Image (cartoon, rainbow over all chains, first blue to last red; front, side, top):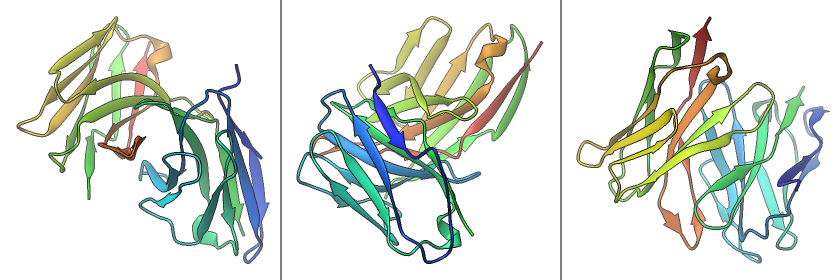
Length: 110
Length: 114
């Protein structure tokens, strides 16, 4: 039982490059989320998808786009990466109220 | 929007002693309050949660208390062990269209000294 799987685990980008972070869950959860974690700031919500076919902005959506590909998969795209987007990114899913997190993607933008 | 403040940012206790981490929230409409434990290099893991219609919940050595009037909630760990060393996060939310938009505190780094 894998839970929430994120790829890649590590990534280094140059300013202006684009990339997509992938997330998949095997718990048949309706809702999925993308958070970023920065030192001293906890986790902040970027985007979420309450159900398949819907997406909504969270607290810090600027510079990101998302796609809810199907019930299992929720991707996060950086169209033109900036150094301010250096962070650890976590995907999560929930069936009712409990959120389950993946192991994270450490992203560095140089 | 919701704002969650967490204290202390670091906490060091002797093995076997108790540890208490406190959080305050701003939005009285919040009704769900989970606590997460994060070990180095891993994602946050849910350890206990409480809903606003309950004042206290306990699970073995871990307990959470909620004071809705004062808008604060606390995590209590008794008989601490070395494996309790980690970063702990509190969060608050209210369900929206089936989703939980958790707002997290800044985290507490707990160190258990042998």
